[in-house]
Length: 167
Image (cartoon, rainbow, N blue to C red; front, side, top):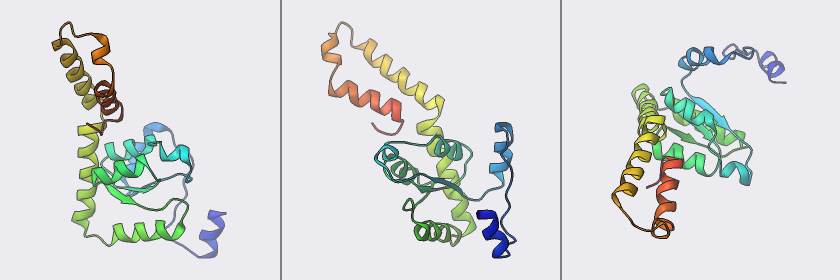
């Protein structure tokens, strides 16, 4: 259907490529200016952070995020992309125009912000640092009872480690 639309409209700036092996994706992503992540607007997807977002951020690419909830919050917190309404073609088009109306330096900065956020909050290295800090804190508490360690404080710390974005 999309291929027919491209032919019908005589578009020359749209290229379809076949499915590619994982090892080619870095090279392919390097050619893109903006990476789209789009999911249906469901309760489940509002609680999901698609792995594509992390992959795009790790590649230093700005994200056009058509997902409500946690994914949108992450993109906004990173200053690494534009958030649009999922399942809304006009909103998606507006987000694309918003991005491409930015000066080139601002587009690049958005990708750099995405990468910096990934490295500081989502990378394996940042997760290991958070675990190390938690374990050090727990070890420093000596004989404090397990029940004292449990509770809201522990939940907050573990949530921060797992999500990589909350204190």
